[in-house]
Image 1 (cartoon, rainbow, N blue to C red):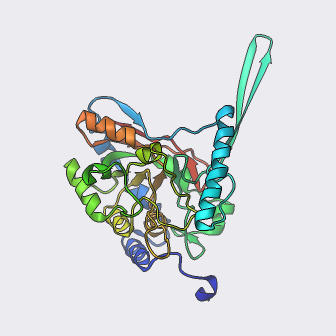
Image 2: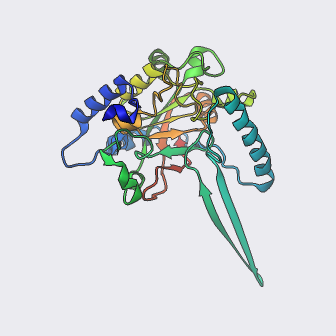
Image 3: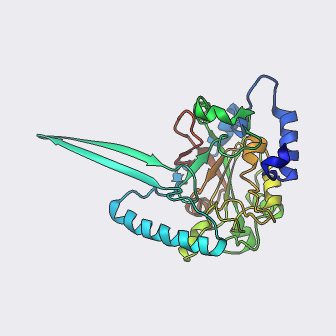
Length: 328
């Protein structure tokens, strides 16, 4: 029967990690909430203790809604779609990662009232967003295990995570710095060795529940005029490869924030890190703006802070736009 459904979306090593996680962390009758469950009182206190200067930096890329800019972005998006389709012959979804904002203003005598109607695609490679457990799964199930059909009725991962309180110590790993480059390239994905070197440079010993902020130089990459490959394009791109994904799983982070995504440097273009959502319930914050944070921490002579990632509590949501903050 499995053969009739096509190839396994998960590599054997992902299955092995999932099996080990289930044996160690799952309890019969209880739904696993994934990596966020590792963020406990000790993790929050550990993060709070890293605030030395009282400064804060946002890790969110700006969400563009200005009408005059949107027309330019629409033209650029259409060109980008043609570009990637020509390279990979992929059918790219229209509006992937888009945000539509309708601002309505009423003037009633001397009184003025403004209201917003907004719709957005919670995923893609543009806007900063948190992936829920109901984003990537396998075999008709999300991590938990949560049956995929629950997403039509009462799936509540994001709500539970929002109520849990995602605040913990954040540790920034500067990959370009340890490599001596401006950004990670598609030809040389991030490895476990890179991550070990970046962690060693911080002088920090990771604890379960810490947030990993993995800076790979995407801001410089894009400032130089390069395009970052959408997820629907099946080809290698700058990012974290298989060995890096295994490293992340072994560290038990509470969540991971990154700028580049999976390198897709394997023969099947499998999502090396995103598949950890299914395997270990990994909480991911995609498209994080980490360049300014890396510069700010470097200037302050530190590599850590209190990471606060508070998602909007939307029932049945597979992901939400988010503005993570790093206080240091």
